[in-house]
Length: 87
Image (cartoon, rainbow, N blue to C red):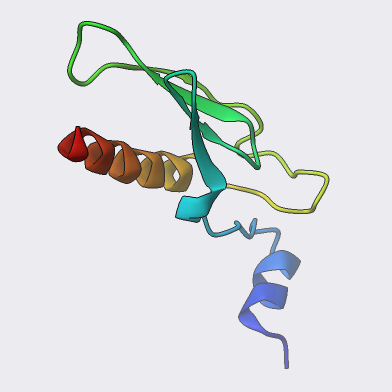
């Protein structure tokens, strides 16, 4: 009997890697998702605008991992909102 992971792979459905909080770093005012190189940079003078460079989100990385854009963005948004509350 196949596992859920094996059956989805056999059907051609992509499996995605879970996005974790510790995969992010803040550098030069941007939040970076280290595995994919995606960058989220707030636009100065606005409260809710950000510049996004998607990096390798959605692609299969050399490690075999694959991240879904919505998952990376959701974790980034949560971290950023918490960062703003502390400021």
